[in-house]
Image (cartoon, rainbow, N blue to C red):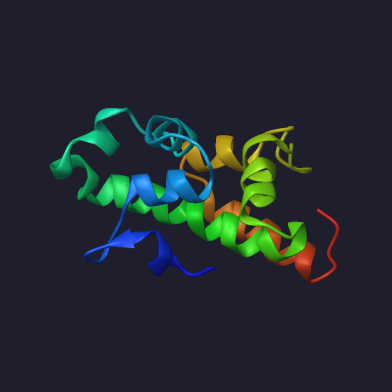
Length: 116
């Protein structure tokens, strides 16, 4: 699915993301490595950091959704599956550490048939 399904007025909306993944906005914040205020206060939702983290999380989930058959299963993978080559860290942990680009590169490598 595209980013636009998770957006309101050109910004990613934590509530829409939470609804799609059947969870709460607060859980989306934690999953993206953000504080609760980042998804509750309008000025914080609009901040570059909040929008970047939400976009990274959604891009990763979207990228693997086809592999798992649903956004819910892709979100579960994002949160819980240790990635080889990253000391057992999950995609969620890597995004929280600001390493989303490495996760996207890892997914591309796996999709290209390179064993990570």
